[in-house]
Length: 69
Image 1 (spheres, helix red, strand yellow):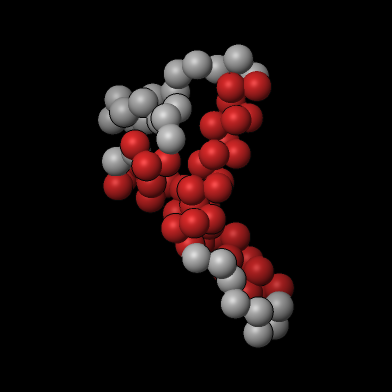
Image 2 (image 1 turned 180 degrees about the horizontal axis):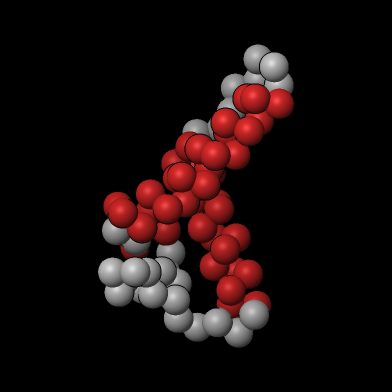
């Protein structure tokens, strides 16, 4: 079976893509439900905010694994 890339690395790339997409749409600020600014680099996010990206990656990884069986 194919080894999937490191979850944390992919979560960072997912966040970067989301950030670039929002900026391209003219969005300059996006707050989490707790009031944290999300439109910053991945390294500046809190652990709970990073977890939002990790959840996305885990869901995609699970879908890839299910489709591979």
